[in-house]
Length: 388
Image (cartoon, rainbow, N blue to C red; front, side, top):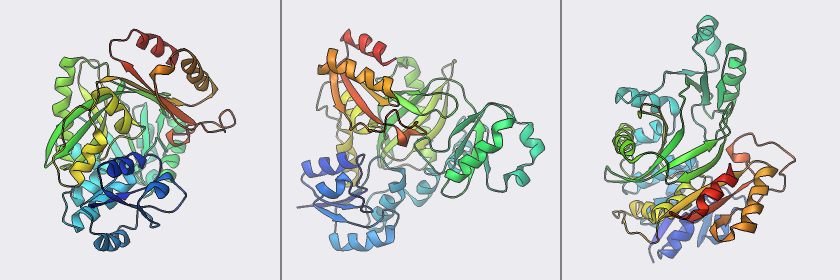
């Protein structure tokens, strides 16, 4: 039986382990032991932190896998590529590891590739001296402040004026693993993402995702929908720009998740790119529902040196995920359970702390539910109205 290494063991990585087993692979899973689901369902589990890539590689030389994979974790990307390169498998480059995981280096790469990008500047703990209070006061607001190397909306704040600037910068720096923040121009407009798969430098488009957030000041994501509402003629203009961004980041293999905003004139501004499958169930569930393509299998195929297959395993539907941020969202779920149970794809475990604490970022949401609705079903409008 061929063996595959999976980096990470939490709930978001579970679909990769399950799919690999379905495909006939013997699964060898590496993660820090915390009792996550992957520890229980793996054929073999190794209690090694995923940032200890050198130690994982030493074990992998004994395992002799045919591929190394993870799906939604930014944190796992560098380890996956390091091990894949070390074992002689197809992988993205060390340069890609750096610029695809650091928002500042990503902005520099976009600028060099002449991709339209917001004004930006990196800040460290010495920012008051290096930038200068006078210049900070002269900045054009609103601005977005974020850590250079974090995810799940952690440390992200929109700043409308100088009075809250320092607190927002300090928050972002404190959340950053490297102790740096990036300050950038705020781009107004609806937010979307583009989900792709790449093999040997050839990019293939899968889906556009419409994103919903809490808005100012933290922009915590409240839900996603596929297909998006982007007109077809605009989509044709966006896809080449996304591919240009993937080339700028040297992404040659695997999944990618490109976040962008759509301007009124139809132009886009790319916010950032993840060199991995989208989280929040976008890659694992929404793409499967809305396109019929098995995205997780594609990622495993690429990791094991196979060209991804574009064969539909189901009929495309409208896919919606709603995150539970408060008790009113739970009421919406209960109403849908009562009136439209046939359209519920999956419901997560619901945190029993709902109503007792606030949601501070995407990682502290209380749960979610996913809907799968026939494209032409009039019920869709009723469900969307409930979700509003």
